[in-house]
Length: 116
Image (cartoon, rainbow, N blue to C red; front, side):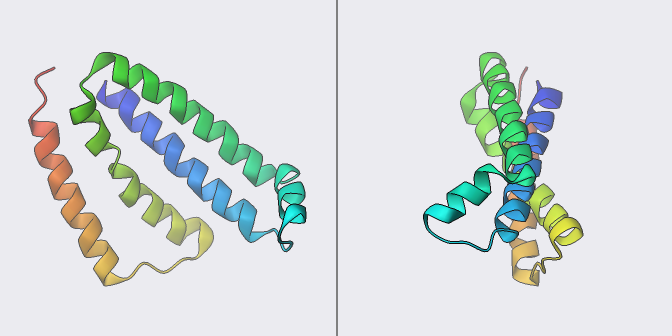
């Protein structure tokens, strides 16, 4: 279940990066924004990877407790921060890194609690 969950989380994170890359390339606002979004390959890649995430997430929930699995999705914060730096050129402040680190410590404890 952990491998499926991690792959699911990766798909969700990659989907968010695709969405951001797609909307960054759209100059229009209002209704025209949606027209360009539907025609944008990054938006479609985001939809595809997010759909994969959704179906994998349902598999995870069929195997483990939601109270264990849902907090582990927070691994996505680390993944998205790293990908945002690498693929979007974003800057992540020290405070954000500290926050992400604290979340990772919490995830460590949650993983240790699994009896599966």
